[in-house]
Image (cartoon, rainbow, N blue to C red; front, side, top):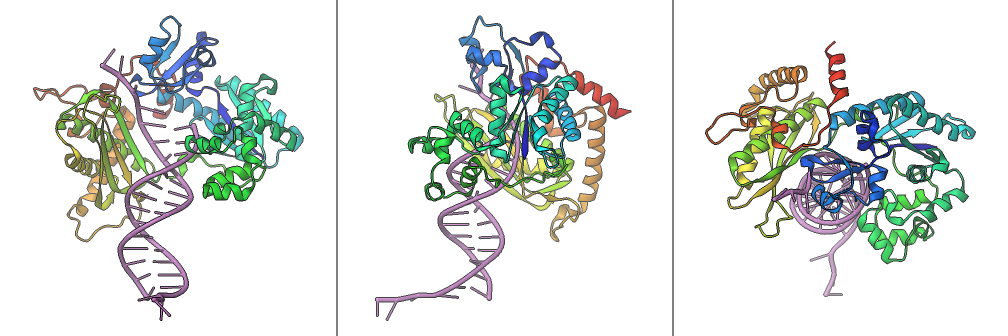
Length: 439
DNA sequence: TCTGGGGTCCTAGGACCC
DNA sequence: TCTGGGGTCCTAGGACCC
């Protein structure tokens, strides 16, 4: 049996941990730049606030509703959800952290008859010690477990934990679930299935296997179909008792929308330098180097009155690297190539690819920079230590600094300076954990 | 005025190898 | 008239997830 533990309205619940007065009231959390609604309390959902709705539209549409609004505070959400995972790790034989707010568990070794009790107990323990409400789904495979969790979230009779362990309740669940809500069926497949007459998960599940093969010619949706019918075939991640931090990323992207629009190459350079620097940090943090640095640049697609463009190019590094100086230099070169005057840009990003472990580093015979590699590694090590000790962006390279027209430097808090976060909550846990780390 | 930011995997087709 | 039979690797595009 598998389980999925899913935090209810995760970001909203995190904010409520420190604002218990908001219990029972409509609350939303916004994306970066206070752009879109990314999390809603049940009360906000009941009011009709839609997922992904732009914040300004929400204000227009609900001028009189008293909705509590928070800018996103990812340090806080990371800290609280890690505490949830830490409890799960003590209660489950094995687990896999699937996303910031979801964790799969393996229930080998837990008596079948006690599964419901196990789930309800876990919910209680997480609620009491972290203050995070979770919903738990238990089933013979991960697809059905996800469905069970939806039921647990929706109907109070389950006491936050729903168990699908026989054909009767499996079929009842499938008949209840719209096909577009099945894990693994996205917008495209849902549209196709609906056009073919499948309204619920059940309508899809009762088709013949060969029909699924012929219609989609895709292994993933076939596996989804098999799991709806009770098989356990979706591959498991390295689920042992390990944290997903240990599985290294194969691509890393840092991108932001700007607060306003940018025409000028110098200003774009500063932003791209910061994203590149962040990518290099992420590479070092997981002990890897990258061999390709990509940059993309785009205008604001919502401004149909303005000329539009979307550009992406990448550059291969002669020697794979995680050095801030190397990655930033490469990113700036790519940017220079894709930048065209005459557009108002809204968003940029840096992607690093071709990621490999940093230990047996392949050096190129003709790379003139090769001799600097050891020096740069030492430098990055020191910079990382200082930034960890005194806060991110304590030490940055010159091109990361935002400058004013007269050439004077402005604040070095580069990300905060560039992004609108008008409703950000204080960060009680981060300070506290910093103190612990320093000790 | 204002519209997020990350990731993964699969498939088809082309280049190239013997 | 008729033109083999395997492979691998890379890339672009499309699908999905949170």
